[in-house]
Length: 266
Image (cartoon, rainbow, N blue to C red; front, side, top):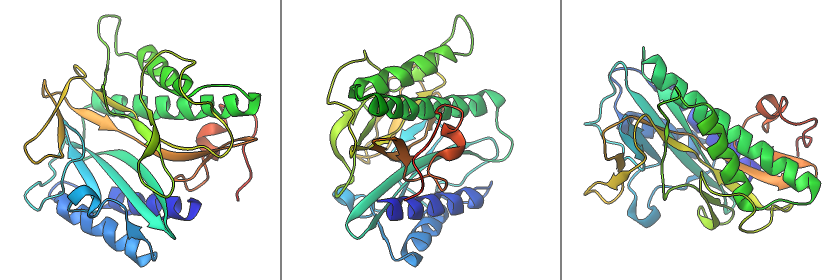
C-alpha cells in the first residue's frame, strides 16, 4: 500500500503542477493517468462502477466526484479538488488535494487550509489513540469536526461540513468498511488498532453543508452554490503511531509538531 500511496502522491504532484488558467480537467486527467501507468500501476477510479476517468476533478461548487471533461476549462480564481487512486499488486492508495487556480480569494485559500489542518489533526488523534491502546473510529470524526469549528471565520459564521460523505477503510478494495464521517460524537465505532488502514477526507464548504448529485450520477455539488474544498490521505495505524501512506515523507513534516515520534520509514 505504501508503493500505491507513493504513486498517488506523484500523480497528484504532477497534476498540481499542471493546474493553470486555460487548462481543462481532461488534460489534468491525462497527466495523472500517464504518471500512474508510467509507474507500472493501475488507476483505481477508471471503470469503478463505470467512472470514466483516472481522477475526480471537482471545480468550485462541485464537492466531489466531478468527471473530467475537455469542456471544463479552469479560470483564474477557481479552486479545484483533485482526487486520485492507484493500485499496485492489488493494493490501493487514495488521496485528494485542493488547488487554487491563479489568484484566488483568500477566504477560499483559508478554507482549504482549515480542511488540511483538520485532516492532520484527525490522523494525529488516531495515532495517539493506537499508542495508548484505546480509541474508537468516531474519535477521528469528532476531532475533525472540532478543529473545523474551532477555526470558523467569525463568531457568526461557520464553515459547512458536508454531511453523508466521508472517508473509508481501504486495502485490497478502494472502499471498505468502516465509513469515516467528518463529524460526530466520540467513542463510537470499531476500535483504532494496529493494522487498520483508513482514508480520511474532510469536505468543507463556504456556505451550508447540503449537497445534491447531478444528473451524470457522479458529480456532487453544494445546493447553495458555495465553493467547496476536499482533501484526503490514506494512513495506516501501527503500534507506534501513524504512517501516512500517500505522503512522500510518510507524514513526518505535518505530524512532527503533533506527535513526539513517528514510525520509521518501512
